[in-house]
Length: 207
Picture 1 (cartoon, rainbow, N blue to C red):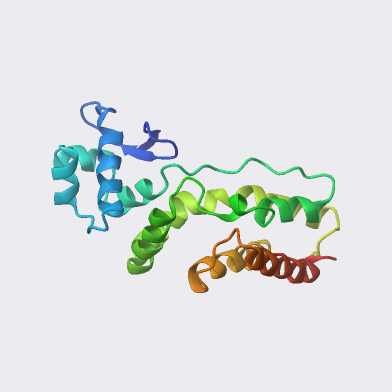
Picture 2 (cartoon, rainbow, N blue to C red):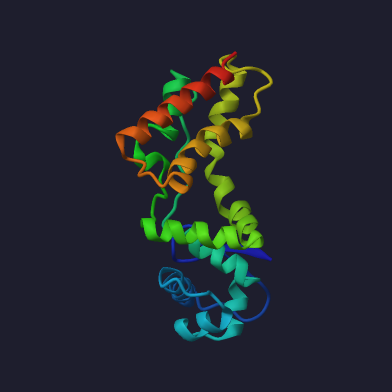
């Protein structure tokens, strides 16, 4: 099966054999899922079919499972960050990309309510968590991870640096502020803690 891109940005759907899809239904189905999520209702096939005014067959022609459909809906409004410059001051580049402003680490494209609903859904369903990670989240890490690897190649960062762990350490500090401490990312105290966490991580990464 091949992947095609539906009308909502970032939503990938699967196309199989049979009669051509009516692509106008793609955003209709996604909207139905988001309406259920925003209303804090359980997302089931029956509810999506009823709210979206589509058939079960139409839904499964587009997504192989309810899990992949919810993962696609959760990604609406989010984008892959642009590539980072690989020359110049690497520390400043990484700090700006990951910590430099609240918008660089928030759930861009989400309201806070939808962001919290996303966390609730993925924490309650490990299969959804993995599907969302594999199909959407992991690709947004690419620009920063490539910049980190370039830093290793340039001799700025230690040759044995675990790039994925370095990313997790920096981004994890931001998630901890929002999810565990419940602090707004734009507050001065939060910004100060994030800057300090980045500095600690950076000192462990440099060659």
